[in-house]
Length: 258
Image 1 (tube, rainbow, N blue to C red):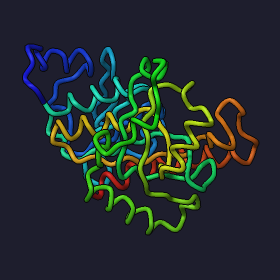
Image 2: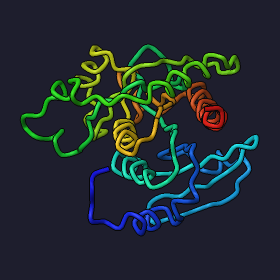
Image 3: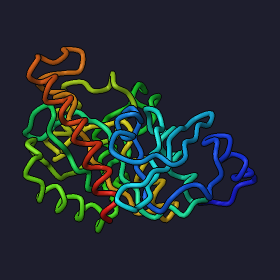
Image 4: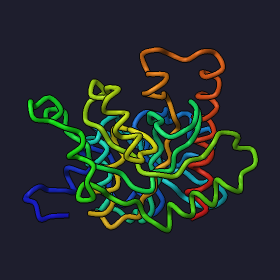
């Protein structure tokens, strides 16, 4: 992290409501999945709640992990991960959702092997804006290669996981209203597996903090076929609910294993 005149210790406690020493080497972050879902899988030891972030430290099969609820959006998530530089965190799994652009269905999983920085609301509405200029290699942030490969291997060995698992790049967008058909077609044709609102900030913050990170996202909508505002039919709703339940279980078991 770059030098700053901020008292990061006090700011950490302001954001998290806990001291950095409470946190563990293995961390799960989520923008919105309820902490209660994770609590069903583990033995909770210490809970914390700050002005911005909440979560708990838990044990599972003798291993300790930290689970953090960060809120939706790149800024909240990026700062949450960046602040972990002051802890002993070494490995981090991001668990979220995305719009699916590759062939697939609601409830499938996408492993983000890299994320493109399309963050920032205002620039999408400048007169000269074009999404085409945002997909160059200079805007690409890779995940932790070994951790991501391990996640793919872990998922490949779980026969009870029925959804399709896709690995590929994810575009982190700065405005839901910018998910126009024209923009989504371009991203699909460029080879993006999905579009989300946090992953590039996670990977960049983890890179700066010296933490290995991977991202696993459940497909919540299909921007070119079944948009968020169209809702889900009963089968899709069941598939999506199962994918979130599976996502929590996978996150705990995989994070403990690495």
